[in-house]
Amino acid sequence: MNGINREAAWSLLTEFTQSESLRKHALAVEACMRACSRKYDDGSGEAENLWGIVGLIHDFDYERWPSLEDHPYRGNEILTERGCPELIRRAIMSHAEYTGVTRDTPLEKALFACDELAGFITAVALIKPSKSLADVDVKSVRKRMKDKAFARKVNREDIVQGAADLGVDLDEHIGFCIEALKPIAKELGLDGSAAKAV
Image: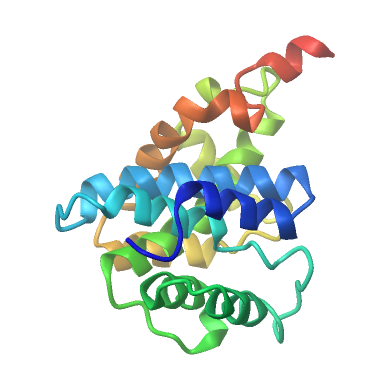
Protein backbone atom coordinates (compact mmCIF):
# COMPACT_ATOMS: atom_id res chain seq x y z
CA MET A 1 0.00 0.00 0.00
CA ASN A 2 1.62 3.23 -1.09
CA GLY A 3 1.20 6.66 0.45
CA ILE A 4 0.90 5.98 4.19
CA ASN A 5 1.99 3.44 6.80
CA ARG A 6 1.21 3.04 10.51
CA GLU A 7 4.14 5.19 11.61
CA ALA A 8 3.20 7.99 9.19
CA ALA A 9 -0.44 7.74 10.26
CA TRP A 10 0.47 8.08 13.95
CA SER A 11 2.75 11.01 13.12
CA LEU A 12 -0.09 12.71 11.23
CA LEU A 13 -2.50 12.15 14.12
CA THR A 14 -0.13 13.56 16.74
CA GLU A 15 0.74 16.53 14.51
CA PHE A 16 -2.88 17.68 14.43
CA THR A 17 -4.30 16.17 17.64
CA GLN A 18 -2.95 17.18 21.06
CA SER A 19 -5.91 15.95 23.10
CA GLU A 20 -5.13 12.71 24.91
CA SER A 21 -8.78 11.63 24.82
CA LEU A 22 -8.99 12.15 21.03
CA ARG A 23 -5.75 10.21 20.55
CA LYS A 24 -7.17 7.40 22.66
CA HIS A 25 -10.36 7.47 20.58
CA ALA A 26 -8.21 7.09 17.46
CA LEU A 27 -6.42 4.08 18.99
CA ALA A 28 -9.75 2.54 20.00
CA VAL A 29 -11.23 2.87 16.52
CA GLU A 30 -7.99 1.52 15.04
CA ALA A 31 -8.22 -1.59 17.25
CA CYS A 32 -11.86 -2.19 16.29
CA MET A 33 -11.03 -1.68 12.61
CA ARG A 34 -8.14 -4.15 12.72
CA ALA A 35 -10.46 -6.73 14.25
CA CYS A 36 -13.12 -5.96 11.63
CA SER A 37 -10.61 -6.39 8.82
CA ARG A 38 -10.06 -9.99 9.92
CA LYS A 39 -13.81 -10.60 9.99
CA TYR A 40 -15.19 -8.68 7.00
CA ASP A 41 -12.42 -8.21 4.44
CA ASP A 42 -11.94 -10.27 1.32
CA GLY A 43 -8.72 -11.68 2.75
CA SER A 44 -6.26 -9.75 0.58
CA GLY A 45 -3.67 -9.72 3.38
CA GLU A 46 -2.94 -5.99 3.32
CA ALA A 47 -6.30 -5.26 4.85
CA GLU A 48 -5.49 -5.21 8.56
CA ASN A 49 -2.92 -2.44 8.28
CA LEU A 50 -5.04 -0.46 5.82
CA TRP A 51 -8.20 -0.72 7.93
CA GLY A 52 -6.23 0.12 11.07
CA ILE A 53 -4.78 3.26 9.48
CA VAL A 54 -8.24 4.41 8.38
CA GLY A 55 -9.44 3.99 11.97
CA LEU A 56 -6.40 5.76 13.40
CA ILE A 57 -6.63 8.90 11.25
CA HIS A 58 -10.39 9.20 10.61
CA ASP A 59 -10.69 12.17 13.01
CA PHE A 60 -7.15 13.58 12.83
CA ASP A 61 -8.45 17.02 11.73
CA TYR A 62 -11.29 17.17 14.27
CA GLU A 63 -9.49 18.94 17.12
CA ARG A 64 -8.38 21.80 14.86
CA TRP A 65 -11.52 21.96 12.71
CA PRO A 66 -14.49 20.48 14.61
CA SER A 67 -17.28 22.20 12.68
CA LEU A 68 -19.48 20.39 10.16
CA GLU A 69 -18.20 22.79 7.49
CA ASP A 70 -14.58 21.72 8.09
CA HIS A 71 -14.43 18.12 9.36
CA PRO A 72 -13.58 15.84 7.56
CA TYR A 73 -13.14 18.12 4.54
CA ARG A 74 -10.00 19.87 5.83
CA GLY A 75 -8.49 16.51 6.66
CA ASN A 76 -9.28 15.26 3.18
CA GLU A 77 -7.45 18.24 1.67
CA ILE A 78 -4.39 17.55 3.81
CA LEU A 79 -4.44 13.85 2.96
CA THR A 80 -4.73 14.68 -0.74
CA GLU A 81 -1.75 17.08 -0.52
CA ARG A 82 0.31 14.39 1.21
CA GLY A 83 -0.46 11.76 -1.42
CA CYS A 84 -2.75 9.58 0.65
CA PRO A 85 -4.56 6.92 -1.44
CA GLU A 86 -8.13 7.62 -2.55
CA LEU A 87 -9.31 4.42 -0.85
CA ILE A 88 -8.37 5.82 2.57
CA ARG A 89 -9.66 9.32 1.86
CA ARG A 90 -13.01 8.06 0.61
CA ALA A 91 -13.52 5.83 3.66
CA ILE A 92 -12.80 8.77 5.98
CA MET A 93 -15.16 11.06 4.07
CA SER A 94 -17.89 8.42 4.23
CA HIS A 95 -17.85 8.17 8.04
CA ALA A 96 -19.59 11.55 8.34
CA GLU A 97 -23.23 11.28 7.26
CA TYR A 98 -23.40 14.89 6.07
CA THR A 99 -20.63 14.63 3.43
CA GLY A 100 -22.92 12.76 1.05
CA VAL A 101 -20.19 10.17 0.43
CA THR A 102 -21.92 6.78 0.44
CA ARG A 103 -20.59 3.80 2.36
CA ASP A 104 -20.26 1.07 -0.25
CA THR A 105 -17.36 -1.16 0.82
CA PRO A 106 -16.87 -3.31 3.94
CA LEU A 107 -14.07 -0.90 4.94
CA GLU A 108 -16.37 2.13 4.79
CA LYS A 109 -19.21 0.36 6.58
CA ALA A 110 -16.90 -0.88 9.32
CA LEU A 111 -15.49 2.59 10.04
CA PHE A 112 -18.99 3.98 10.52
CA ALA A 113 -19.97 0.97 12.65
CA CYS A 114 -16.91 1.27 14.91
CA ASP A 115 -16.49 5.03 15.34
CA GLU A 116 -19.32 6.00 17.69
CA LEU A 117 -19.42 2.58 19.33
CA ALA A 118 -15.73 2.62 20.29
CA GLY A 119 -16.27 5.98 21.97
CA PHE A 120 -19.35 4.76 23.75
CA ILE A 121 -17.70 1.58 25.06
CA THR A 122 -14.83 3.73 26.37
CA ALA A 123 -17.31 6.00 28.15
CA VAL A 124 -19.02 2.99 29.76
CA ALA A 125 -15.66 1.66 30.97
CA LEU A 126 -14.75 5.03 32.49
CA ILE A 127 -17.81 5.10 34.75
CA LYS A 128 -17.11 1.63 36.15
CA PRO A 129 -15.57 1.78 39.64
CA SER A 130 -12.66 -0.26 38.25
CA LYS A 131 -12.29 1.96 35.15
CA SER A 132 -11.61 -1.30 33.34
CA LEU A 133 -12.79 -2.76 30.04
CA ALA A 134 -12.77 -6.13 31.79
CA ASP A 135 -15.96 -5.04 33.58
CA VAL A 136 -17.79 -3.89 30.43
CA ASP A 137 -20.23 -6.26 28.77
CA VAL A 138 -22.92 -6.04 26.11
CA LYS A 139 -25.65 -5.68 28.73
CA SER A 140 -24.01 -2.68 30.41
CA VAL A 141 -23.46 -0.98 27.04
CA ARG A 142 -27.07 -1.55 25.98
CA LYS A 143 -28.33 -0.26 29.33
CA ARG A 144 -26.32 2.96 28.96
CA MET A 145 -27.52 3.40 25.37
CA LYS A 146 -31.04 3.85 26.76
CA ASP A 147 -29.84 6.59 29.13
CA LYS A 148 -29.98 9.70 26.94
CA ALA A 149 -28.11 11.81 29.50
CA PHE A 150 -25.10 9.46 29.41
CA ALA A 151 -22.40 10.24 26.80
CA ARG A 152 -24.88 12.62 25.23
CA LYS A 153 -22.69 13.43 22.21
CA VAL A 154 -22.64 9.82 21.04
CA ASN A 155 -25.24 9.21 18.35
CA ARG A 156 -27.12 6.04 19.29
CA GLU A 157 -28.80 5.87 15.87
CA ASP A 158 -25.38 5.73 14.21
CA ILE A 159 -24.42 2.79 16.43
CA VAL A 160 -27.60 0.91 15.51
CA GLN A 161 -27.34 1.83 11.82
CA GLY A 162 -23.66 0.90 11.68
CA ALA A 163 -24.29 -2.67 12.81
CA ALA A 164 -27.27 -2.96 10.45
CA ASP A 165 -25.16 -1.76 7.50
CA LEU A 166 -22.54 -4.37 8.32
CA GLY A 167 -25.31 -6.97 8.40
CA VAL A 168 -24.56 -8.01 11.96
CA ASP A 169 -26.65 -8.22 15.13
CA LEU A 170 -26.11 -5.15 17.32
CA ASP A 171 -25.35 -7.14 20.47
CA GLU A 172 -22.86 -9.26 18.54
CA HIS A 173 -21.14 -6.14 17.18
CA ILE A 174 -20.97 -4.52 20.63
CA GLY A 175 -19.42 -7.68 22.08
CA PHE A 176 -17.01 -7.92 19.16
CA CYS A 177 -15.80 -4.34 19.67
CA ILE A 178 -15.43 -4.79 23.44
CA GLU A 179 -13.17 -7.79 22.76
CA ALA A 180 -11.22 -5.83 20.12
CA LEU A 181 -10.46 -3.10 22.67
CA LYS A 182 -9.31 -5.37 25.51
CA PRO A 183 -5.79 -5.99 24.12
CA ILE A 184 -5.11 -2.22 24.15
CA ALA A 185 -6.86 -1.50 27.47
CA LYS A 186 -3.58 -0.29 29.00
CA GLU A 187 -2.96 2.26 26.20
CA LEU A 188 -6.53 3.46 26.57
CA GLY A 189 -6.17 3.81 30.36
CA LEU A 190 -8.93 1.24 30.76
CA ASP A 191 -6.99 -1.58 32.40
CA GLY A 192 -8.02 -0.67 35.93
CA SER A 193 -4.80 1.18 36.78
CA ALA A 194 -6.56 4.57 36.80
CA ALA A 195 -8.87 3.40 39.58
CA LYS A 196 -5.94 2.09 41.63
CA ALA A 197 -4.11 5.42 41.30
CA VAL A 198 -6.93 7.33 43.03
